[in-house]
Length: 251
Ligand code: PGA
Image 1 (cartoon, protein in one colour):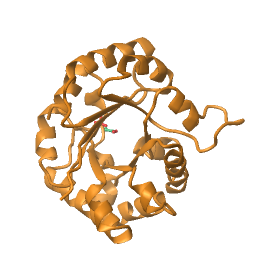
Image 2: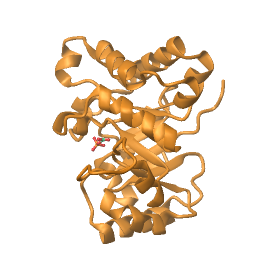
Image 3: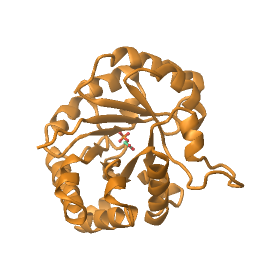
Image 4: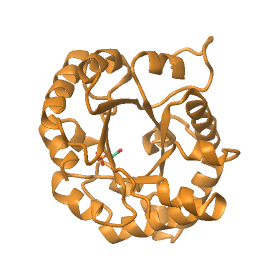
């Protein structure tokens, strides 16, 4: 079985000014030095990217963005391109986070365009999928995930998907302190890996990384990471503090 190197990614959402972000990133770099069992990534807000890059450049902490727009440039007020992200030092980009879907009209179709744009630019996309509480209660978890991944990856070739990371983030577990059980996470991760197997190849299914997100904390990360199909975590709240996040990194 190929070994998948875990990825522990921090999503800072709309938190931290430039100087606050640099301070946290600087502390994190010190705390996770030498932690090479896993990849580490942080996604500060756009305004802090360049400054944070100066703090993480040349270290084992990679820089990611929380969103992008699919055009290279133009009259698109408030949007940001892959070229801009890359010149700010980004190697990763979170796409289709449930907060973007919920509050900013992100659809599976726009997610698809963004994934294609990220891949074409050489950025590593972290595609977020996940069901709401209502959808889970109505036993629609797998059909929702199916739709999100099917449209999200529409017309993407094997070599495109090979660069991608998937993050399973049940909406009911985000910021609620209500983590999915390790069994619930494993069940969905297994399903998503099976989907890749069925629609691409067994080899890709074995190598693709699937992160879990939703109230990941130092005290639950170890159990989640012990599941065979959990390859890392996308961490919101608990990534804002360097000390706490470093404990997750050292799961
Ligand atoms: P949380 O957020 O860790 O605060 O639940 C996870 C996420 O939204 O990526």
